[in-house]
Image (tube, rainbow, N blue to C red; front, side):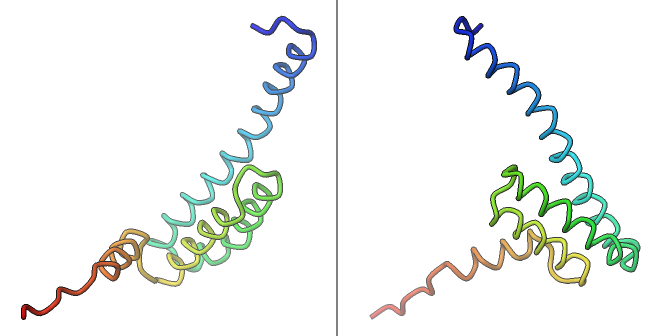
Length: 107
């Protein structure tokens, strides 16, 4: 427990900030799940929901809850899913396969 008055105030503020931030983080996760599920079942509904999901992610980024690159990566993943592109796992597998150096011929 904090002893100093300013530390006590900071602890109170941290609790309030945590509650506010939790709501935004939850919305980001909810929209991510909605888009990823809809992209497999109802692509048109997913396309309509995509701009709203982008807005939620941008808001989280603006409030410094997500790093800019992380937000961009989430938006890219959703766009690929809706467009019928490759899944995140398939893209990761391709990257690791391309990083492996080809074996040299024996002399």
